[in-house]
Length: 151
Image 1: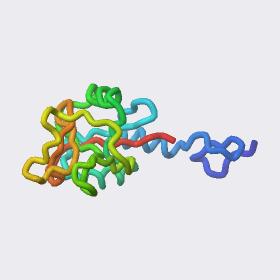
Image 2 (image 1 turned 135 degrees about the vertical axis):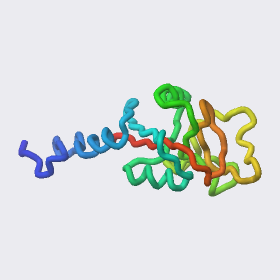
Image 3 (image 1 turned 120 degrees about the horizontal axis):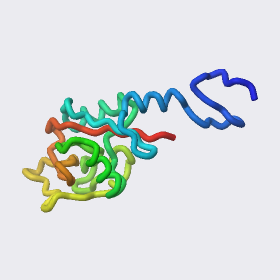
Image 4 (image 1 turned 90 degrees about the vertical axis):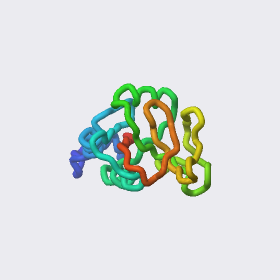
């Protein structure tokens, strides 16, 4: 088989097997790997929900989309306990929680007791608060977790 003209790709029968540049980018920008997902916990940088989402996109990922209890437990075991933005929000339709990462209903919700409560009618974004989810004002400055998946 001839050598690929693009060294960033290994090709077998016209099918991309590995994109080396993408893998390297994930490992640089997203230092925590769990299965086929890479994560970056911004523990020293705080932003409102919109800026956090933008910052994750600039890195080649998106805000954390928690898909299962197991994923949430594993993530919580490797990041310091704090408050982190996730991809969840109900900006399009009140109290319908959507993940901007998936473009559909959030696949997993483990709310704190009494949440979501839309305190003062201003809580439309989802944060991890210690070990559970909470609705929060999207303008609050919090740490955040970015996520990227390999192909």
